[in-house]
Length: 65
Image (cartoon, rainbow, N blue to C red; front, side, top):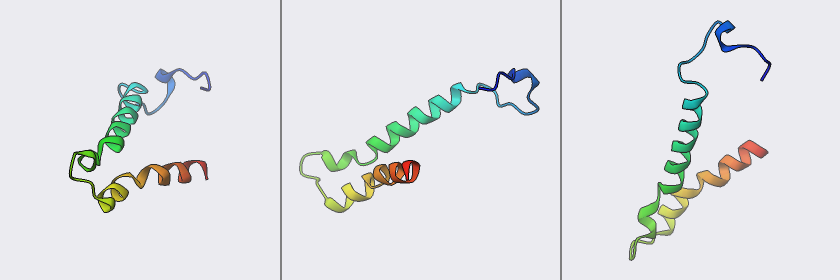
């Protein structure tokens, strides 16, 4: 970003920035599949759906707001 080689930085994490991308992908999968039970036949529950997926609009509001 600032054309500074990683070797010159006083602190550096191993496997970065790749672990950051893996973490973001894993977080997205967990966020989207957290309430999959709600979508099974005969298990629909409004409270479970809202409590499982209310995080998605909250994240967008906090990030863009």
